[in-house]
Amino acid sequence: MSKREFGLMDLYLTSNNYLDAEQVDERHYLIHLSNGKEIEVESRPMYDGKPWAWRVGTQIFDNEAYAVGYLKQLIAEKVTGKRIILHAKQDVPEICGVNGAACRCPGKCNSMICTACPVAEKFFADRDGVELVYAI
Image (cartoon, rainbow, N blue to C red; front, side, top):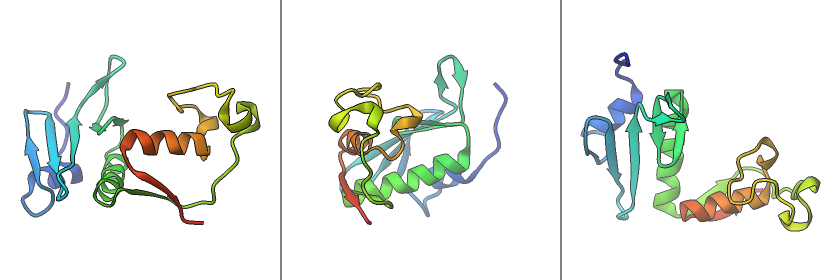
């Protein structure tokens, strides 16, 4: 695997001016937050036999800008304990049945139809240990 360039994520993880990040090994970092919670970050993770750019928590990214954006959001959520959803609570897609009883991806919420689904939003908020708040 070729060596990648030093980017913004590297700056956040290695500079004393940004995050309290501990380098566990060559590719793994542990970010320590002020409330005692932690976030794991991995550079160049392998997923399904393919190399990716970053893993932040459980999410895999092939683009550093997306990984940095998600890290910032995750830090805010873990420190405040709240996930702010910037849209009104939507209805469960009709194909998924009443309150998601016929969900096609139970426990995964990983298909395109899950976008803006309140069942999926609650699933991810519960998984990440944050309260779900609809701003609108």
